[in-house]
Image 1 (cartoon, helix red, strand yellow):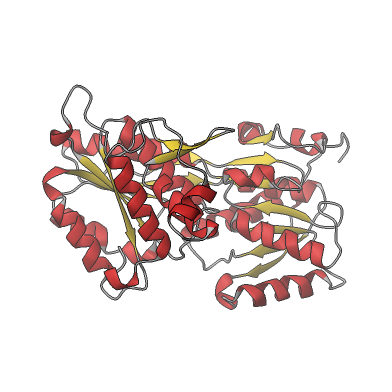
Image 2: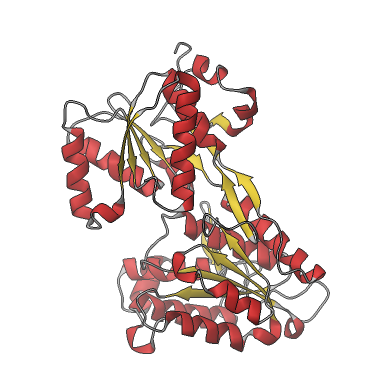
Length: 401
């Protein structure tokens, strides 16, 4: 939803490729030319082509297959019609995301959008992806115009949570359009959202206390941050206290303290060189944890020998880092399915509000924080289903605490 003058090169390439797919230049399931060939064809860089392809993946137009390259999706949005019906009568479900940066393929939001669009298409709806540019003065006006233009066929809207969208639900109510948030939009919200149950963070805190790891740096998490961040941090502290009877030596650092990436990296390196360096770094996202991993390497510290790392989102790449990243995994696919189920229930019943529903996060134990078997066995039984040794982990947990 950028202004025409501000369209990026990657958006331009993505638009050309999308038109080619819609016109049938490549058949369903066909493999697209290599990225080098596309870069040559469009006289642009490989990074631009990669960004364009990520854009098409977000739109549900293409899909990546292991050892098979990028192919035209078997049920991309231009094909998705109601089961047994024609495409002209298909209703649409809009997916709205605020794009704070051009490349966010390393984020949970990216996976949430892809999974949501796949669920929508599989249910027989058209996908209407709408990306909001937070830097545009009329960003919300543009969004509302797009939604108004689609109102005749719009079944509902799924909003990927952002504070910028906080006034959109009341506007949608006025348009008689059902809506659901992915992730809790505010502390006061009680309906129309799919939240994440962070009992897995409680389990993490419990394990850290049993392992006598008390110095914890919460990277991008603060008690006054977003509802999601507060929930992760609060449950971590509660779990630690439940196991030890005391609070951890917790330091919270918010990205708002210094938004410059280089400055954040310098802060991490400086903190890791202190005598009382953190024993555990808990990142608000997997990307934050990986920045901490780079800082550890910069100052010559071993992970997990000297410092243990935990990511806070559990996106797919986190299983393939070195060392693989222990994460509090938020299940984008499950959340997307629940959101669409809620939306369809609202369409059928005519209800404007449904009670919020939660899906559980899970603690995936990998190489960056191995947890001994004895510590896992000491967890409350109710938490056992939320914790597991990830199959890609190469470093076995020891038997003792």
